[in-house]
Structures are given as C-alpha cells and as structure tokens.
Length: 285
Ligand SMILES: Cc1ncc(COP(=O)(O)O)c(C=O)c1O
Image (cartoon, rainbow, N blue to C red):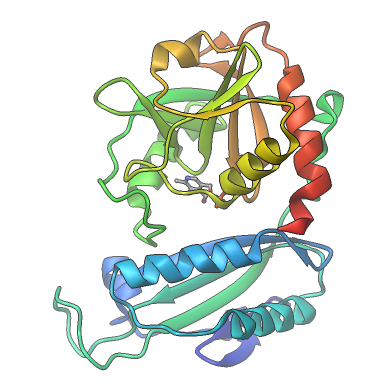
C-alpha cells in the first residue's frame, strides 16, 4: 500500500484528503518537485529542495522547512514505501482559503503533500540496451515563467499530449524566433562536432536538476566540451545527436525528430560517454 505524507501525517495515499478550496486545486498555486530514488539512494535531493525553496520564495509562499527536516520526512516516506525504485513527488501549495479570490491570502497554512510511485530501474549507459526516443516539434505556447516549477502544468500537459497522441515519446518546443527552448517535461540538448550544446537558463526553461548535475559532471571531467547558448531549430534538425534530460529519464537519446532520423538514426558516441559518466557519479549529488 502506498503511504503518503500530508500536512504532518503519514497515511495511506487512498485516505489523503485536501479541501476543494486549496489554492493548489483552484489555481495551480503551488510548487512541486520529483526526486528519483533507487533502492533508497536519492539523486540530487539538495538541488531539488533548493529549487523548490527558490520557487516558493518567488511566489511568496512562506515555508521554512530546513534541509534536515526535508531529509527526515523523505527518508521516513521511503522507509514506509519499501525503498524500491521510487519517484518522490513533493508538493507545497499556498493552502486552503475560505473563499475563491485571486490575491494571495494572509495567514493561510501551506499544504504539504508527498507520495511515492514506482519508476523503472536506473537507466543503463549501454546504447545496445537503450531505446532511442522519437519526438516531434511544436511552437512553445506555455507561459513566460517556465523557470518556476509551478503545479500549473496544463501548458506542458497539452504539449506532451499533442505529441503522445501522435505516437511520439516527447515534444521539443521552439519559441517565436525558431529557437529551441526545452521539451514538454525535459531539458533539451544537441551535440555537434563533439560539443554538447544546450539553451541557456532564462525564463523560457526550467533549470533542470539533471541538467545542472550533467553539466557539472561534464565540465569537471573535461573530455567533452559543453556550451550553454541559443540553439535554433535548423541546428536541431542537423545535429549529430539530440538528447533530453529529466529526473525520471536521466539522459535520453533522441533518434528521430519529426519523422526524420537524427544523423544516422542511431544512439551516438557522445551520449554513450556522457551517460557513463552520469551513471557513475549521479549518486554523489
Ligand atoms: C518542463 C520541464 N523541463 C525540464 C525538466 C527536467 O527537470 P529535472 O531534471 O529537474 O527533472 C522537467 C522535469 O519535470 C520539466 O517538467
């Protein structure tokens, strides 16, 4: 049975209840995270919680749990859910008001909700055992604050669904200048002439924790050059490799964009090297 944490209490997920006046429910007024855990070992807990704290501050939700408090609650939740391969979903909304009114209310207790769900085992760095992904491209029609990991995900959900309904694994998004932003639930990269290139952090993309860890690992290793710069869609279509990253996917190789193979349509050697380094070092973060 899945055990959740809601407002200070561990309880069966099926028994967890919130008020219909919760602003997370009415307005998507909240921040969330998903932290992967493989056999009890978390990847990137500190950067995930730091991003959550910065998201909460940016929308004026006062919630001051220390890193130790987060660690304790997450550890207890994993303990109660059997420590398999689990995604830990963490959600803090502004809380339940007594009325529906847009302005931030005073003196409302934030709602804190965590639960775990099964995820596949840690992805392998072996190209022969890895499935390349097929993606489409769509103009990015989300809001201008994609750097905030808001629970208001309808824009992302609609982009994902448009690809999914047409048989694609993900959708790469481009802005009105025909520049790559990210994917509907992942950060995006191209590889050209051995260089890994990814759009810079700004309001158009989420500062992904996997992106942060990957770039740090690659820069420290030094064998693969990394650039953070604007990437146009012509470059995406002519890349040697295309990747997407997220906490649930690690680094996923894309082998087809809009029905056209990426280079020779096979997973590339830079992915192989980067994924090997990432797999070896991700539990250090
Ligand atoms: C829009 C978007 N971009 C990027 C990411 C990747 O972020 P992370 O690596 O922190 O999972 C996600 C993950 O949910 C996302 O939703």
